[in-house]
Image (tube, rainbow, N blue to C red; front, side, top):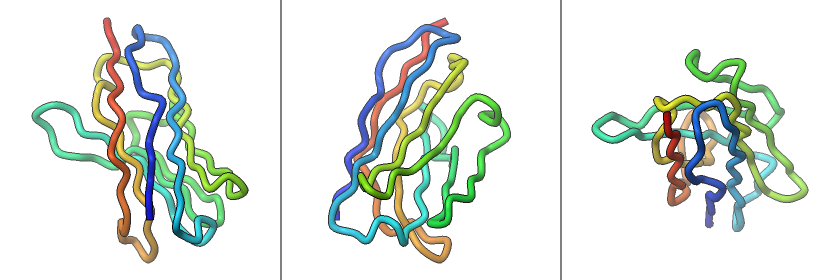
Length: 115
């Protein structure tokens, strides 16, 4: 099983980025997918979740700015991030799991938001 996160980079505050997490080796449509982030000196936190059925959850600080989506035909989950703030700076990780677990993790992609 592989999860390959991409799309990170340097962006100015107020800008947008779209992260992608391409997966292989798992029955993608049966897995919940999640995006986490870890800022320097902080613990990893859940940012967004999308169930196998398409239900979504967002942590309060990103609601209205981030959108998680999935394309089961492409075995890929996305995180569209708009109105980015410096406090969104972190390494973003994707994860796949069932029954509330995170069974597989991607390698992370760095997002840096400058003020």
